[in-house]
Image (cartoon, rainbow, N blue to C red; front, top):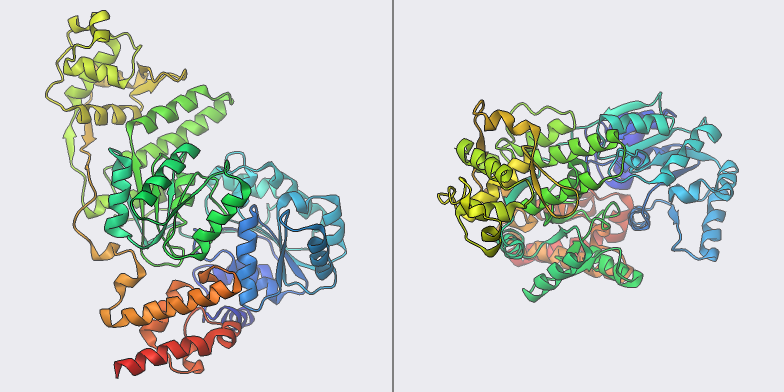
Length: 606
């Protein structure tokens, strides 16, 4: 069976062998057994059900949460010569009936649909009359209320185990902690499924987190310095902020578009299409721009606001570098992020258990931001994976963080919060510490406090950094009324009593000026100058073919496949067949066109 799977992989996808645990998963599912697959974004989850779908009789039903994701997957499969389709609300009644007819007459290898469509009586009746090869449940973490993208529609998918007990089921996700994994197995009736846990490490991604000073200037500097012509995603929490940032990037000459749920549907779709089909476009988005993004050559992901959890951060940053080429993720993080998250937690109406769970998630996210150790080690540890040595490929490994003894300033800050009555926010308390005689301070007679003016040895920026870290460490708390009022946490008592000391990180203000060869992010930076014309010629041909067919360029070939063409310069179809990512269908459709570009380049070199 493994030999058969490899043959399918080679002829359809153009790859010689599977990666990591793919071979075990494919052979298990092809044998009719259930599986739960946890594999990082870009790790090749889709092959785990697409290959066995072509090995087993019948049609594979793939449950996917977003229309754009279905469309992208189907467009890619059709290029490979695979008979695939999707059913969604974007189709009219005539188109939907035509696809249902294809399903019933057995002329589809894979059919994608949303969970809410699958659980309808009409769909289940059709499926009962159709030979089904397997069920694949993508983004399976959506079934868990503890997951970061909970969707109630996923709860109905337990019907598959009840009505189709002989059909193998495969649940897949890129992000799930232990609790979420247990929920997936229980709620989807996968108690006997084999669990495949791949490494969550994305070694091609460089992680960087910086204090947010002037977010727009920092973002612009980051893009100009490292990704001047690359596709990227910039995440913001609010719709208004996405529009402001997109306009600012456009004014600075970047091809930026905006995406959020409040846009008219036609504008949202047009912007997403532009991002997917054109080269070097930056999308500024809320997290509404999410799971449906399969674009492999996103070279950077930037966050201008703190993600709500490490699961969300991992999934959002995982949209960078899906093709395995070097990419960068950068988070700009500030004091207001900590205050906002603490306020949201305080205002939550959930149960105490839910609040404790959310507190742990926020604390883990803050710990990643404030750590002085390897970020990748901490991130992987959250997902129960141990990395024995620092990664060497994050900002802290590249440039270790300095720490300073903040024991006395921290005690001074806590004392100022207490002595002002635990009724004020950070800015007011900082003004007291530095001795600012504002009207408000004078009216409250706080200039008479012993702590007034005692903090003049530190700058305003340093005090804000200190308060941010005290909040992140849980030594200070914020009220839930929206005013940002500070109060002491019980955990600060040992520090106030002088029983413990406190070392804090010393923030860096700017991006590291020195370029590191290991973080050269754009694919073209790895090419010699003599190879650049060929690289550009291949990309131009890909863009022309994609435009003619109305599909994204990466559906024709990934950047990594074009890079392999540049490296090996095949001059015949037999030589081109050896390039990874070129199966029989693509070789037949595009081989001669790309060979012509390569031959022209070789002739020009002679």
